[in-house]
Length: 162
Image (cartoon, rainbow, N blue to C red; front, side):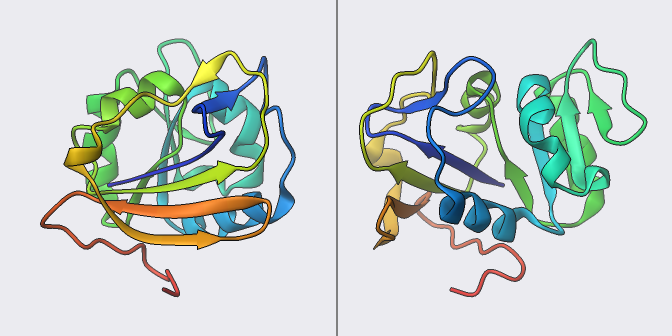
């Protein structure tokens, strides 16, 4: 399971009903990683970003959403069980409470740190740096991409060119 997120240095991941920045090249990287894989996300994240993905690959954690396009799970553990049946790389794409639930289970995190300061009201949860190894870091101009691995693992998404 791979957590994937863009955030600021202060861990801001959202503002209102979206992100407080627009970095098309980072979003294109996100889409490249998750395309063709299983993506678990919360309802608000789905409402904001779900239209950019093949909805059949999405599992939405929600007790209220009705969707004929995406698969719905009433809890994060239920979403994980559904994802395991698909036999594809599983990405966790937010929001904050979904990330918090995924942190103890994830093998890797693909985190993009957007350069600049942005106000926000949704944050990526804190994580223990001693529980993760920085396997890769690339400065991409407007953001820094970091691949963290849990010690003892080396997952790669299918189609990951690195």
